Length: 200
Image (tube, rainbow, N blue to C red; front, side):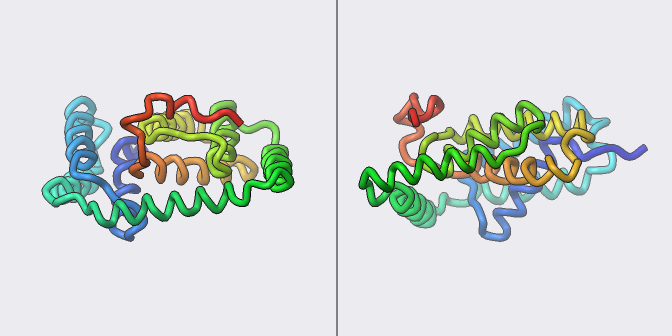
């Protein structure tokens, strides 16, 4: 009997593909933790992994390789510098008239979100609008947990997530949460208030 790939394996297979394509990176610590999580998940639910032995082994092997490499600190600093530049471009110039247009633009973007999205997805669509516009900060761990919850919810209720109106929003939210979850954001360890975000 066929069944869906286990959520954790699907998530890490997708993220590892992004690493291979150079679209994201993992630190040694992240790779070690992910490898341990995959091994533990398979040990807890071996039946769920039946038919996915090759995918599981490939992911574990790839994470083991990444865990044995030195952190690419210079690349990481380049990514963070690019993120800071993009954030600065969103916020500048800071003349009041620009701020008014920014708020109007943000409101218009919220208004374009259709009614009737599943509640959890709707919440994250709006939070990510604020995040993209610099009005909200989301910690990587928070994004990772949200991504897993949304994937689980979609697997349990595929009809609600696969219709033409909902699916594009779901796919974008999952992609953006995955990018946040695997990124290293400046100050996340030093700023416990990150998860609360910034008031708009």
